[in-house]
Length: 244
Image 1 (spheres, rainbow, N blue to C red):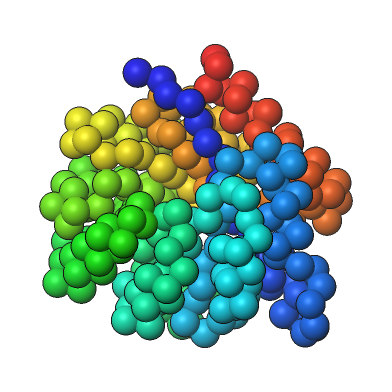
Image 2: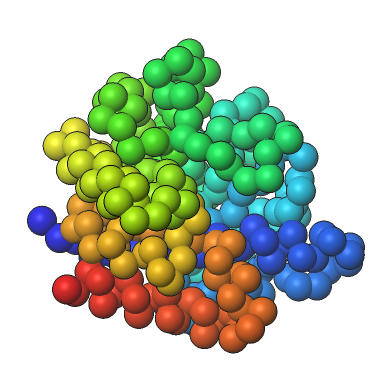
């Protein structure tokens, strides 16, 4: 069954550009407002342990000033849990995090890290924060996510976006199967990581996926066409694919 498809815009790399020089420009909160005007349904921001892009002040301002729902990406650490419980964003997506990585490299080890994940999922859920776990498109990982008590899974689309030809088709088939498995398990299914204008359509067409979170490509494309225009085109491609 096909459901409406939401677009969450990740504004992390607006902050990356700001931090390259210091100061306050460009402002991630302004980017969030432009995203709303361009048709985004939510804003995603990843507060990393090393604060390489989004800052604590950014999160405070987004919670206070933003009309759209905020999805806080976070590692399952005591520090990040305390921050999330203090701000109580609409949603929190728990992701793996390594200090030396350039960007998130894959899904959580939801099977091996149950002892660390379950208390974080439970406390966030008790506080009214909707929790998702960023996972590989593997049915066993989805089953583990449900066992941890998370109501949402966020499928890692990186391998699909990086593959070509028959390999990409195989990765897409994995995503389709995982989205169907999530539906069977009663999980809400999101997806994202590395999606572009060229790769978004087949994922958007998966009727059981209800949200895509996209950031780096949109900020990069904004250098050439502006942020609102880059988001509007992505929104249109998503809607066209879902409609088809």
